[in-house]
Length: 286
Picture (cartoon, rainbow, N blue to C red):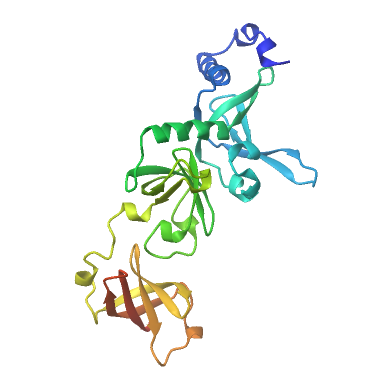
């Protein structure tokens, strides 16, 4: 039966105060298309597509009512968002708007897309500008990338937009449900959704290069750990959020060193223009 044709008075008669508050919020969202906010409690397979693959839905249960948000109602560009991203939404705080109510079975269907459209309108009413400080919400964390939401925009961040130092696995540093400070790098509401807003989390903090020369002068030796390799350079952690780009000593071989090895390095050069530090690996240490 269509919800508008259903008399809820009988069904609602014996509700507890907590249940009544939950249903009243759901009715209001359905009737006025107002926002609700909740934490993703689970990910369910609600059907099978024509290829035999499960269709996924995020589950929110504020108190007793099960709210399903299908994958295609979660993302503006759902066709290009892998199912793995949806699976990683557990614990994320998201907005949604109720689309359909099965009052007799205590189940609702909602849309996050409808909510992000409202959030984007609210966001642009604040007249955001480049270099404004904002807060982004972590939606999903994978090994090499992370989805965050700010102002109704879903933004895919890589490591160089998050920190000044490299790291091999986002999941060691970030978790779904976190909030992170960021700054706006570009904003233009006339552009497509995917290009309308760009942000930087790392630039919301002072650059760790400042004062580094005093803490680690040229020719000083420092203990470090290898956190990456790229085009012959070895990324060695110098501080929590800053790497020294190192080379091997002449007698060393790349086969002798692996990511995760503890090493001794010597600081050799500072590049003020690129804000980089270069060094040489002296030896391993334990």
